[in-house]
Image 1 (cartoon, rainbow over the protein chains, first blue to last red):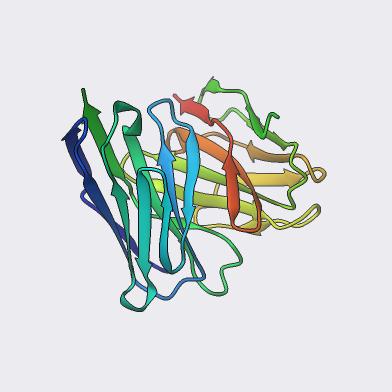
Image 2 (cartoon, chains in turn orange, blue):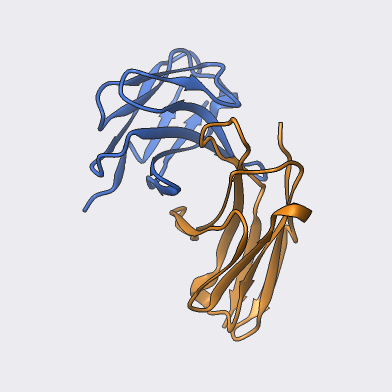
Length: 110
Length: 110
């Protein structure tokens, strides 16, 4: 099956810093999503981004489908950004069944 | 505006006991999913239901059964719990490329 690799596995920032999280995937995909899991375990859909660039406030994401990677940018980080960020993909033929990476654990200190 | 509701939130089972995890969504979504989350493993798909009356195996279906009782409800059953099934279980529903996750059930099998 498709492989999804996320880096770095852990990241510690001071409030106000910027960061870039990376997701590499091993095959073509119909769908790529970024999720945030907060420290209480709730999963929130951040972006649907199989290609191109999207922005939502301080967060933006870029997917280069031809090179099989996606980047999540967090600017001016806040303590509420802490948690685990997951990349998930849906290869052709998988019928919307997402395969998740192992995540990046982000800790933002005040 | 409940979204996806999972019950119970916490459960401790003895090896060999059975139980059913309940999931209900009030968004009129056709597709529903059960995932498990283990430390350092990301989320892995157990079972999937594209619509009422249909179910499909995911990556890790062994030891589990599911029932799509109606459009709202998708339950996950452990017939004979094993310590390897200690995990956090998430139910999700989908419309288009938008996924909504429940808050999870933390299950410990001793």
